Length: 370
Image 1: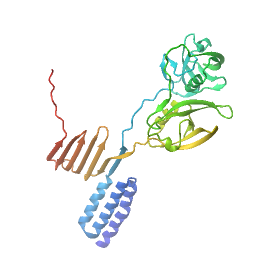
Image 2: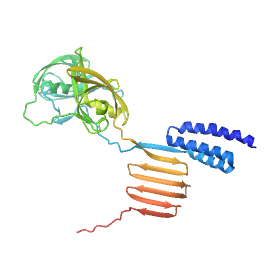
Image 3: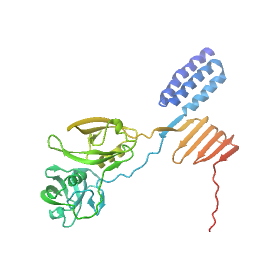
Image 4: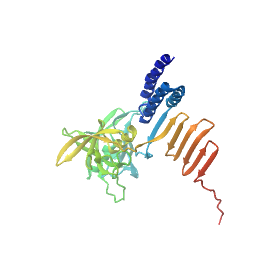
């Protein structure tokens, strides 16, 4: 009989536990338990029937084993700003020139197939302002200014900020299917009002830095935009990647950066904390421009074990929101050998599902009116 069962047991130990180990070895803890169970089964086979039963019980528990992880600290949430932020009476903030209009991304008119088209769409025109006088209307699409393509609203704001004095600008505009050219005589903002001025766009979570939109020309006189680093916050991953204030981020994972806000929005929409991204960076060192490719690991909150389950033998769960911890040993459905629960400072211990000890429970006190 021993000659018959030995190959079966060896096959189970060799093949069955190999499959279990291969499936669960992604977590070191479960892989180690799988190995221990395999050794227990083999040892039990060689010595007694009791050992075989023990090995099968442990193996069954491991088949239902589960280890889960979650961030070590809660990841803050943030509301992303729109591309166009109006801090004062609908005018683009921080503008040195007043074009007399507000614009947004040029989305298609179809509600069933929304796509972004070239140019920027005029959302509002100030009555008797520069754009109104030039014949521009709400709904028009600005294609270029002085021959430079304008495909993002931040580029219009950057042009207004970088051009401090009044002047005439040639706008190429599309209205429905008609493209025309007009001259906009922009005036400087010098009415004496106290207007809020935008400093930068900030990402306080993933990359922990502040950025402004930078527009310049490349060697071929083609317009180029990027996100210039103007402020680095504590715990930012940028210094570790040898990035500093004054560097301009031109691309994120090979895709061009159109503005400071679009860079921040893409980070939060496309990536998770702790992931790695590749930044194409322009740096001016001693009067010479250098193009760098830097790998940056976004802010990482760390990982913690949030759940461990070994069948009815052991159950452990922990969460940060709400702050709770629970440990159960020998949970046999209606009966448990040991239970421990911590919830917001309140502790409870149960032994054999009969004896119960609790500490930290608050006492409700009825307040009397003075």
